Length: 531
Ligand code: CFM
Ligand code: HCA
Image (cartoon, rainbow, N blue to C red; front, top):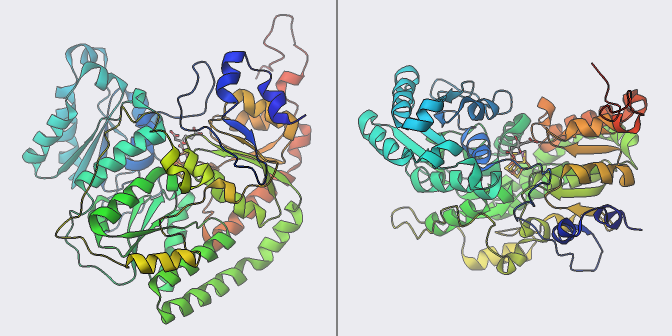
């Protein structure tokens, strides 16, 4: 029997009705339609984060020169504090506040009498202490409930201090990290930051979109791009800055790494400024090579193409031996991979180049196009949270719009296999027979672990320990367990070494899942050990 059916049969009829469309087995040659981007059935232990986490934690938090104030109780600020996750480097021209956690620390009296006074005071203190060019305010749940007007306070502070003050109404309850939080953050950047700079355009310039510099991935990608001769105008948003994003409209090309979190910004920048976008993937040597060659095709300059090939040859040679020895250890192993969005797809390729097949995969917040490809976009219902999230439309900017390539040239590139404004989704790489679970939960994690027994499970922060305690190697792919970088060529070798180590370490045979043991005492919690 298909493990999918064994697991789903354990649900009550109500939950079964919901989950049967979110959990599918891939059949080659079939349409393989999946249900995605819907609200989780209450009671299910989903892995998803909230709207505030997506806005402040994922998108705005990494902007190093922005002093971001969490307006809310201290826990929200503390748990979204970037620390080692949001890697960023300041320099003599760029301030970096990422190490700080600024919060209004709302107390009960603020909830009862309003928190606006406290927010104004927090902005004043941030200006006096840090002298930032830009402040961001991120709202947490109680702010929306009591109705503090953070937008009016931001407008007033802008006047008062002569700096940019951005306000994000990203209360946690408005939706999940992605459809909710990212969208609010990115819309805010589109409306208030992108296109406000006056830098001159630079030849062969690109923006890296949907690159959050986890483990230094953005730095590694930039290193390779710079070696070839590209100029990176801005990164959204890993090690990114307000200062750079202001000029992002001057780039020739937008490179979209995480399609899920930012494809709509790429579309808007195309409409407003004429910046073309291309889906790239700098995870895995094969995907990196394809992306670099696609870029060379776009720019169509013989010298750039020559440098692209020279850099590829050098970078590949440097990792060849290491990759081969890791492959010798890993070939034939299986993996499960479950992250929020794009990474669940991107890492399938890297694992394949190490001989590892992904048997179980899924996104927490992906939409159908992230699974099935952008061609299904017209058939997708609106986002689950779209009623809560402002939808913005843009038109050509008369001062800054410039056509980069003609539609005919873009069509020729597409015909040659260059993904201009295209993305084929996870389906293009996943193997026949793999199980896909959208909006994965803890019950399914444990059940599929039993039936599929992958050698390694790439997971999130919260589910990782359940997996390890059941005797399966696990690495979390959200912050890479503070390892990395994993992007590009050298990054691929780092990843290969980390995975080989994780799988071969003898500890997994010594672990017995706590729930497999006899209860220690009658009535105790299923044999849980005391510390
Ligand atoms: Fe994009 Fe992300 Fe991801 Fe994502 Fe995320 Fe993330 Fe992620 Mo955690 S934006 S979809 S909502 S690459 S926070 S930096 S690691 S789940 S796979
Ligand atoms: C989020 C952020 C998150 C959480 C990771 C996890 C991240 O979705 O809100 O808890 O497993 O990468 O930090 O995805």
